[in-house]
Length: 320
Image (tube, rainbow, N blue to C red; front, side, top):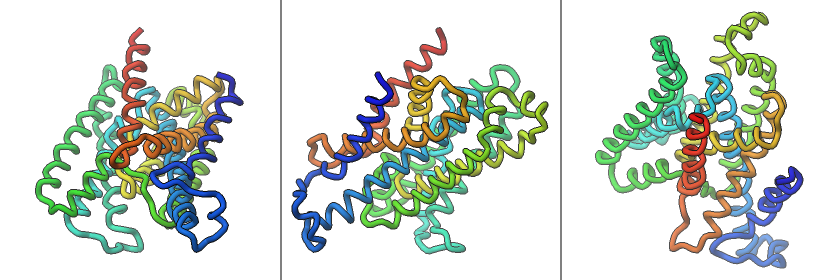
């Protein structure tokens, strides 16, 4: 597919997306801010489009970081169990009823961040004991942690009441439903600064993508840079999960699709991956609203339907 057609298609989807949904909007009514159409467009549809774009951007760029740092095409915050750790942390905060603010940070976001960071440090610690086939074994550890976190989340689910369980179900399936601009603005700031920080370390990321030895020969403190990039990525993912729940496979699919179109170095693919991640998730979210169903499909189902076969094909191609 031609690159211009490729980007033109997703830009077209972004322009059409605010007008797709259960309620049809009339363009003539959008100028009247007191009309129902204008309220739906400016307070529900448009914030959702912005939120979906920056959520996809964050997922895509963090997927690229994890795949580069671990030098494995299958490594993402989702496959390594980091998203599941953040989900479990957020679920515990919901079960404990910690809806207040701690040090200016929402308790759900704080617990989600702690769950993601705990998983990161646990993976780093366990990787020290791996000798042969380290990257494959680390991936298996991540899958095992995901299963453990899912089981623990089920325990929290059975201990919770109906309201708490509804919130937990939303986390496990993922949702991009937002009302107003508070969450879209918050996530856009987080996604922007995450991308800026990763781009600032683009040369270091390029060296680490080759090997730690090459980076150290260039005088790079590989442990420090790796820790910074992992923590920044984990913070972004944790906050996203605390708001929208788990959205899988975006961080896996997007970096590979960008690599297929742009055979350049990692440092030259950072911005492209960020942009394409946003457009890709927005496309998936538009599908959830375009498919006629009794209730809106969770975004996690759509990304899993696309990412699952992609994940299998990627594994088979690597074995060949």
